[in-house]
Amino acid sequence: MLGREVQLTALPDGSVRADNFGVVEKDVGSPTKTQVLVGIRRLGLNAGLAHRLGGEGTAYGPGIGVGDVPSSDAVVEVLESGVDGFQPGDLAVGKVPWCTTAVVEADELRRIAESESNEGLDSHLTVLGHVGFTAYTGLIHVGDVQPEEVVYVSGAAGGVGSCVVQFAKARGATVIGVVGSGDKVALLTDVLGADRAINRHDGPAVDLLRDAAPDGIDLYYDNVGGEQLEAALEVLNFGGRAVICGAVGDAGDPANYRRLIYQELTMKGFTVTAHEDLRDQFEHEVGGWLREGKIRSLHTVFDGIDRIPEAFVSLLTGGSSGRVIVSVPSQLRK
Image 1 (tube, rainbow, N blue to C red):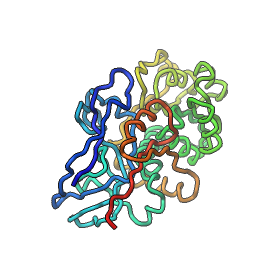
Image 2: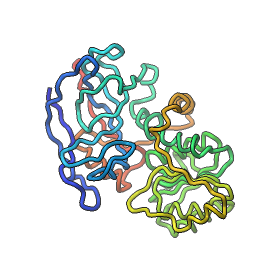
Image 3: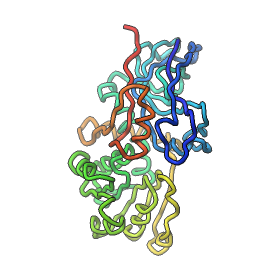
Image 4: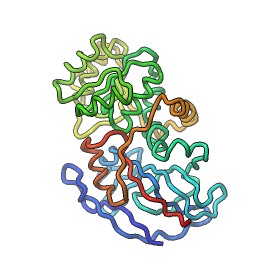
């Protein structure tokens, strides 16, 4: 069976470009007794993958060289299976290559029950998916957010950030988000329910944050590093916490790290893959919020496997809101 996949064809020279990737045909092969043949229906893209292009591996995957096919979390449709528990037409979530069709180990997939399919395919890659689990782990487990605390979120209109904003509100916190445009400011307050939103282009980060939080902040959820992290350290109240989820570009170290001493602050990073024990709690609580209408899936969709390179660059340059998802039509023979 022939399929199509997206390969890294040239290492980025500075910023990642769409022409660093190419779409090629491939022979998919047939599944063994422990595998299933799947067609990708939705593919979620992650900004952190850019750090592995031509670089070293991380907790989230190996380094990616020329000729390699990146992988991301996806909603897939079973096309062929000899494995108990999976039938053609079943939907599942798992990490798969950037391709139209793939053979994967059945035990690496989590079947989506019929009752869950009503949530919408995109939700399984946003609030109920990897970015939602990342947001939940950092905010609830690492950050220990409490009702009525003031939470500051950077990259607040992104895949993880938009989930953090909503989850913090659902837990009763006051939420301030920082984004990169006026449209995203409106998105945060009018759609996601943030109490206040900052356009980072309106002035120095620390001044904007002090204006938005005159009584300080209690918890900072960091998706970008750099000046936003430094601003948060300046404005965190005594005993405050900073959760480090990600960083963009050459964020560098905070110049004001001594604030950790004087204010008895806590700054802690995490990788979500080390916290699978929280999965059931996450799915129960966040699934309940979704069914109750307290949260929503925020995503930007690109149609077709050929648009993966364009979609990935849009994610890295802030040209989209929420999780960036690539949609692929069903390949199941009716």
